[in-house]
Length: 166
Image (cartoon, rainbow, N blue to C red; front, side, top):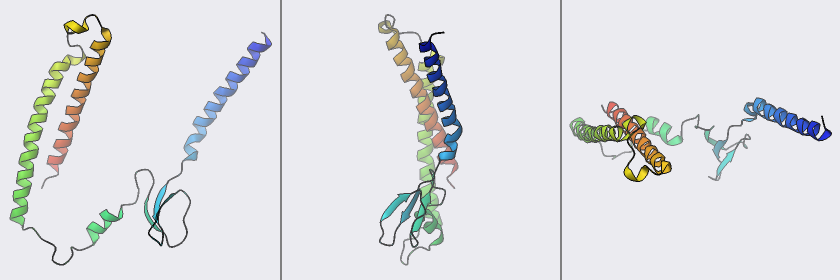
């Protein structure tokens, strides 16, 4: 073997070893970024523990600790004079919401059926303008696939929303 070939192989081996090391040690290099408010009310984002007196708002990618708004909503009572809704009014609002969401769900399900029909299991017949251009056909297939996925997500979201109504 020539020296040039041996040198090339050595560089490639070093590159493979470096990638393997990166893959092995990358999970160990993770750090949570936390959100804090200092004594003066200024926001700080850091992965280092802050000075004393700072209030921790959230930490981690998804925010492992609850946000102050959520925790205070559950524990703090409503202020004096805060308008209250009686049970029958709330039931009427929930019924109206359920009706609107049901209509939206019905519409989305119809649109999903239409999108699936147009998609034709991924093999609709090409249009006359697409018979000479495979790219145009592939673009249309991709758009049809996206439309099906969009309507599936919408139907799923509406069903989830409807299941949460009392």
